[in-house]
Length: 294
Image 1 (cartoon, one colour):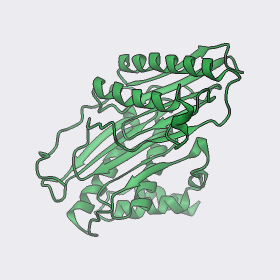
Image 2 (cartoon, helix red, strand yellow):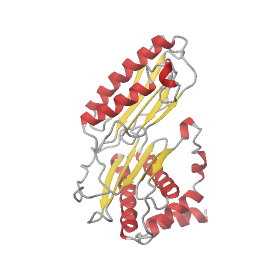
Image 3 (cartoon, one colour):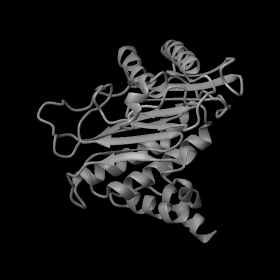
């Protein structure tokens, strides 16, 4: 209990340059929920990457990074999405983005993003960029603007249900069609998020449940492109593609796709509640010019 009081006090105070990272590291050791985030656990897996380039302690970059984290955590629960940037020149500017899955409420969103921040600080140490994906939350920071900067060749994360439908080909075709329709529903949503339930005779449960979402900094064109890559990797894929682990086998009973800009998942059981946090997302700031940045 004393540790939790210390943690709350730490977050409540006006943060000085080095205080936020110290607080976040405290979260890593105090919050028992983080031990559930084992990489092999489908429901509580995490995935992320960190830059090998390093910033110096007590530098302007570290100060700006602390401020970005503070802003992201403090405001993300308002709409489930937030962007932030700090810095005035190419050497110390920091951009950040936080996005929660649309199926969690405001308090869970803030807790999830706090844990994601703890994880990225712990794993990336002094890296000048990094991102981490928890089960229901994503956080990213970088030394250049990445808002709406989508690239099809970026790294992705795929997890597949190893069990298959009793009619793999038919089920795979149905799943692919349903996911294609789901992408259109995402594009029609102001939050770029949707959940879908569809009946099918090719599933043991007779149902398919789908969740799909783009980060709200994406344009409709980039959102469609990102989710289309996800659909191709988790549904209707060929066995040949699955040999190298890049896609789910045809007829898999479920699959999950994650990238730096969108997420898609389907199962033959319900895995979500439907919460859509309002109001609409803020418009990302452009920040300093990108020319000459690393």
